[in-house]
Image (cartoon, rainbow, N blue to C red; front, side, top):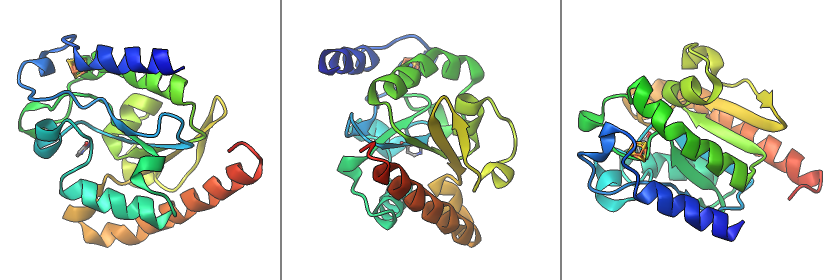
Length: 190
Ligand code: URA
Ligand code: SF4
């Protein structure tokens, strides 16, 4: 597992499979515990993430940290990654061909980490992981079980910063996530 994991991170770090490699400062493969029970998936690196080579370190990252604390976990215990590993110019959404080029890395991260719960932050993550185009306001708050993994769509933290009135629903989602974490732990699957 460790060799395969290191090989995967190295491969991502040197990747030039799509045009997003052209303007990046750093690749942002992901961060956290490669044996995490729970993963959080965003869209793609922003300016701060591109500068530091780490996911969710800007304003939305600070909110994500608070959400992770709210479920009784630390950033080092979970794994945080994105649909695309290089920053889209002007923070635009990833193009479908860019997401298609990058998704095999995320699928391999899912395979090697083998989490029980995957939290999808926002519509872009849902679109490319679940192949579901529904609005996030409809997807959120509902568990989806696929191949033994529990997926929970919820709002992207940057959407919550723009529209704080959505925070109440987001906290509802995180309460469900906390309960599910306890449920899967109690089953001895820790
Ligand atoms: N937004 C994202 O979707 N991902 C990050 O890593 C940072 C901001
Ligand atoms: Fe490679 Fe993904 Fe970066 Fe595109 S976004 S260059 S596929 S790592």
